[in-house]
Each structure stands twice: as C-alpha cells, then as structure tokens.
Length: 421
Image (cartoon, rainbow, N blue to C red; front, side, top):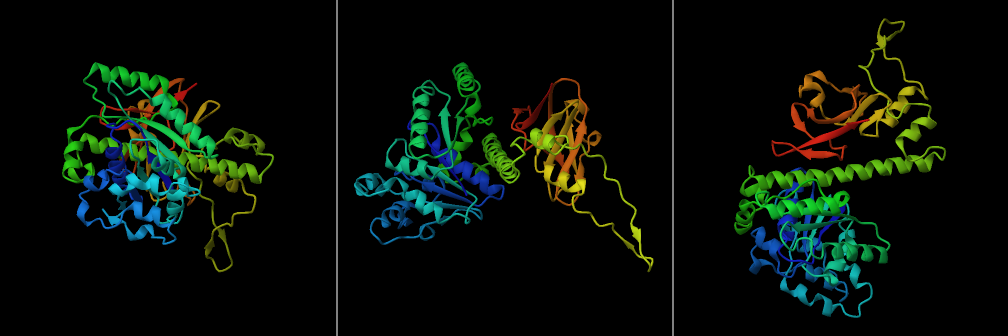
C-alpha cells in the first residue's frame, strides 16, 4: 500500500481539496483508496457530506486506544464514500492528541502501526495533514511512502517552501526513511501575471521535484466542496476533474517507475555479473538493450503419425526466454539508430502510436504483441529532434505510462515527449 501524506504548514494552499479529489480520482480508476483525516478541523468529512453529529469515533480514538491498552480497529470507524473509497474521519479531539501522548514511547509511530495492519486491504492511503508541524504531522510522515506539498501560486507561495522541504528532509533522515517528496502547484490562475511568474520560479527551483500536473483555479472545486462531493461527482466534465484525473495518473505512473527499479535491482541481485541498467544488462547478455520486434513469424507445426498437428515445444534457453525477461523494461529507448517502444497492456486488442513523426495517424505505427505476456513492442528510425506522441490502446488515446517526460496539449491532457539524439 502506498501512503501519501499531503503536507504544508501554510494554510489555505488547498491540502484538503487535493486530499479529497486525489483520493476520489484514484478510486475512480479502480484503486482501493483510504482517506485519512489527521486535521482536527475535520474538513474531509465536511467535504464528503459525512454528518459530523453522526461521527461517534474518529481516527483519534483509534490512535489513542493503543496507549490505553484497549485497541480499536481502524475498520470500526471507516465510512464508505464510494465503491473504492473509504474515509477515516477526524474530530476536534485530535487537537489534544499531542498532550495525551506526552511521555508515551514511540508516539510518532501510532499512525504507522495502525496503517500497517491495513496493508493489502487498500492500494492507496491519502493523509490530509494539519497546517502545522507537530505530532500529528510527524505521525503522517512516519507512515508515508510519498509526500505531496501543494503550493498555491500566490504572493506567499514561495515563502517557507524551501524550509518546509528542508524540514521533511531532516525528519526522513532522522528516521532513516526514504520518502518521495514532490511539489504540486495548486489554485493556479493562468490569467494573472503573478501566478505565471511564480509558476516559472517553481519550475526553475523545483523542476525535478514537481508534478507535471497543475491544479488550476476552478470555482467548480469550491462548489463541489460546499455540496459535500468530490469534483468527479459534482461536475465530471469540469477542468478540475481533468486536473485531478491527470494527477492520479501521474501518481500511478510513479508506482510503475518504482516497480521497474525493483525489477532491475532484483535481477542485479540474482545475477552478480549484470549491472542495474538495462543497457549493461544487454551488454552482459550479448544482446541489444531491447530487441526490436518484427511481426512474429509463424512456425510450421510438426506432423505426427496420426496426421494431427502439434506445436513445436520451446526449448529451455531459447532466445525467446531472454526476450521475455527483457520485455519487463517498459518505456522508450534509443538503441543505436533505432527508437524502441515497449509497453504493457495485457487486455488490449491493439496498441498503436500517434505522434509528430507520423502526422498523428496511429494506423501508421502499430505495436506488435510479444507472446501472451501482454507486452507490446515496436521500433522506429527517426531523425534527431524532439517528438510528441500518445499511445492509442483499443482506440483510446492516452499518454505513455512508462515515459516520465510529458507536456500539456491543447485538449487538456498530456503528450509524452521523446528526444532523439
């Protein structure tokens, strides 16, 4: 389970809006999601139309119960918001949590202990943190695998952001914890010169730590909160919904990147002679980094005495075994003078590529399926330059989930970007 803490000690930057709508967007694309409200103001419940007077127990009761040797399970306080989304609500009692836990050993790990018991029950946990660096925020950071820092693109946006990131770094170092920290530009109003200038500063100073997605200023987001609905329910066609769907896709794409790194590290551990990069792996195997796949050739079946056909068995050590392993390295790579695309769509009937290089006509660049693994591959020869493209999966246009290089397009989505040397 990935645990994402939404953190910023500055109020009014849209933490709760991001928490609610990111959780809803993840649930909408099929991820089982838990939204944990760690803010005593309990705005997540308000924003999801959970009646405050009906909340008998909150996350406070679960956290404090451990110190009283009367443990309460998290499942006892959860509210079902939608098919894939559940809420662990907060209450004003959380404001006394720090005083109640004074002198208690390992008090900064209460939430971590609670969420560890839910591992396997949810794909994602989103934690809405209070606008202060105290014990509640420490608990969220201690449990988190990822941190999102929403930054309003207003006059005070940059003030304290570097200090905030420094604080997060110190906390992670203190607990020997690796956490992915990324900045999210929120409440961005492209019509104002100040917002554009601040966005430029953010991109300059935090380029490698920023989401490509920007949450634009949108009155529908405020209206949705006032009606107790996520934007996906209140106005599914709004710009706000497009932004949060894009953010959810980008968050999920980071998971794919981490999985690829784990695959590489696992192979490196098993085969001491093979390094952790795909290029070096292929060099050790005396193969190119990714084999460009032509349309598979059909072998003639062998004949047996009774006249029936049987498929020729694949021999151990066949080159196809190596190709199958290498197909785990998804994405786009330049191998000598060829550009190789590899992606994974197990249920797709067809995968095509549309881009600058084929006049955005997907029928001109068809990917070929490799065996039954769901891996698709193809290669192109392109002149040096920068190209934009999208995958077309069973007729649906989408950005390449295994390519981190993207830029926005005029249709409210993102194109994947490829640079050929």
